Amino acid sequence: MDELKSQTAIACWKNLWSEVVNDFKGFPVIDGEVNKIIQTARYVGGEGLVDMKGEEVEEHVEEHQKVLTNEEMEDLVKSPTEE
Image 1 (cartoon, helix red, strand yellow):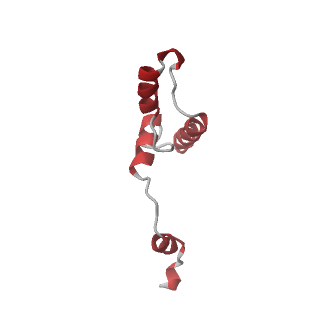
Image 2 (cartoon, rainbow, N blue to C red):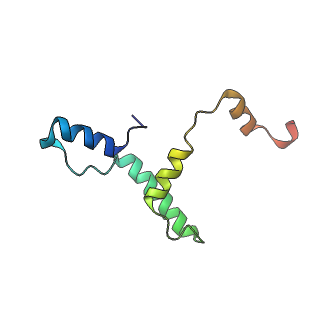
């Protein structure tokens, strides 16, 4: 369900049952998190942050969605002295 884009759901339902389709803009929890990221970026400021848009955040998240292997996760939590 996380991979389903709102535009895809709208297009499917519009063909199947157009009376129930409205201007769905996304799931509130996801939209809320994106808004928090944008607010934080604007607070921090700087080039590329003060004018950040929701679409940019969503694109970035989609580009970096990947399930880590156990080995990759272990590498992330290793302290520099362990190696």
